Length: 275
Ligand SMILES: Nc1ncnc2c1ncn2[C@@H]1O[C@H](COP(=O)(O)OP(=O)(O)OP(=O)(O)O)[C@@H](O)[C@H]1O
Ligand SMILES: [Mg+2]
Image (cartoon, rainbow, N blue to C red; front, top):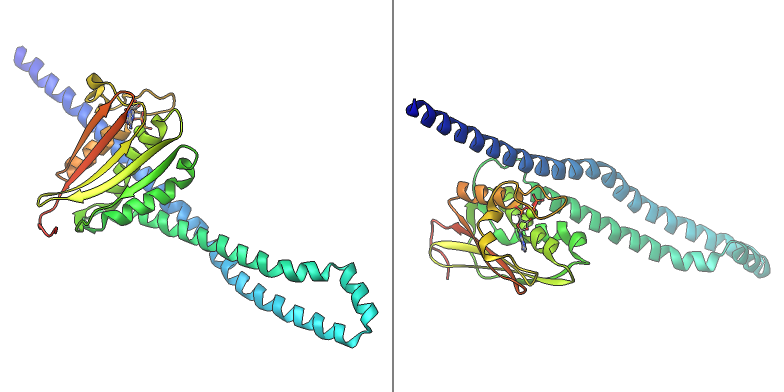
């Protein structure tokens, strides 16, 4: 009888673990898919807007030349009257400004699409050699809007080697940690992201000067569904820890109430090539 109960307990625990893993992978997959889907959908229209803009620029140049030449055929007073009527001077000054603003806006959108693709790495299912700093940059670009009224971000990036990992998953961990830091602030704060390494590990540290976490909660926060937020799922840190376990890595936290929190992610390097 007690053996049956033991077996039942073991099975229940296994089901709980599997449920947890399923939720984690669903959340991860949907975020990656969303990012890749958005990037793909925007890519097509942006392609023709970019090519139209090049033609538009040439057409405008031709039309302006035509206007100048036509004006030369007319008496000066008539030219001046027509130019005034159609705001010629203002338009010919404003047009190049509008064109160059549109071009740089478009460049920014193209950049964001590239970041989204880098971030989602939707095709990656394998461990590959990854430059962790690229992931940090693209994650920060994605979060730029979210962060701008909440925190200043400082980067103290060390000289670290590439490491073998699933880029999209490590990006996901960094995103969770930065978002948590930003969401913890009650007023404008500072998030410091630093990286470094020794012979065995590459580490990424996300440090904030927010309200901090009570010492007795430092383990609880990693439990699935533990959240203190109205709209939180409480999966961010649980997911991050399970990603790191898959990478033979670890996540550590230090916190001090009223001073802030520091989450450190350590990923193993199998080739000690740090200097
Ligand atoms: N930097 C931090 N400062 C203060 N508290 C934090 C910090 N990071 C995490 N926490 C606490 O840990 C809890 C769990 O975080 P976790 O990321 O797992 O879930 P969440 O942020 O609440 O929801 P979500 O699933 O949307 O990430 C948070 O609700 C918060 O109370
Ligand atoms: Mg979170």
